[in-house]
Image 1 (cartoon, rainbow, N blue to C red):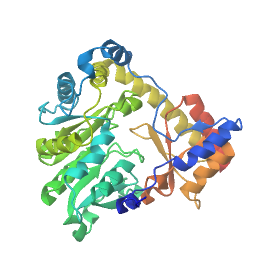
Image 2: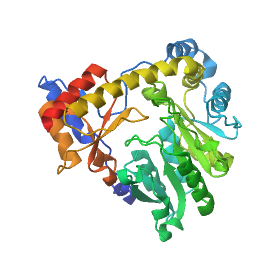
Image 3: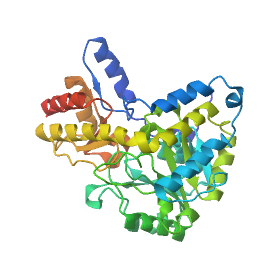
Length: 386
């Protein structure tokens, strides 16, 4: 059989794959494994979401091809939510695109813009779909380490001139996975200006816009002057509404870029099941009443595990947003080695920072995906690891 494309060699290994076999073996041996690796919470979607899917599942019109147009009510509901939540007015037909999860759009947009030699600037560590889409499209990823001394922001002024001149895309993700960092308004404005100057597209992965604590309200990049000229923002139902397996999201922003993404996707898929999109409408309609309680559940988990980790000997800063905690690895040990020991010795799965990029070395991520009691138990076990 012929060899795989050279681009396959540019793909990073996907996180947690190596741990699956170890977990399987430990569970088979009767070990009580606490999995804090994947960001897949054990919480339910809003009741209206599952009820709406039941209602439409047998209706023929929802089972036809949606193509990229999708369900009109979905587009209109997204536009209404963007106006309510962020004060941003968007055209539901030219500035919104339904997605099969935000990952779909994040990974596919580079296919419409990157030629060999073109650069996309990405955070390191970061969601692997950024690097994957860039590699498979034939572009070049320029990774910028997210470090504490820069408040886990990409220092745009430090991008080398030869890279800056070839930059066609800038990926941002605030609130950030995995570091949990948030971006000040001035930084977001600076990022818009950077992309305007470089004639580049700003891709803002805003999957965690609704999981924020202590009164913090993340903003949309589209709230800033001139942003719609250069920006596309991605939203997901996975985290906000506990709908990870439902695979539903949207892209919103610059009409030209939305059109390019739609054309790329027309060769990749025929749209998400419109019954799922109808359920998405029900989720958005539940936002005001339902989301605060869901966020409170994550906040309780955050408070419990941060205290337990600090009591166990770690140095942890309580995050303002996301469903994660970013924890420094004890000095002198690689994050992958630490994660392996945590699993083998104590049956706790954490995500080593290096699995999301070399810039994540020195940290590990835990996800607030189990109850507060289980998180506290995991923290005690992790205390024994050190």
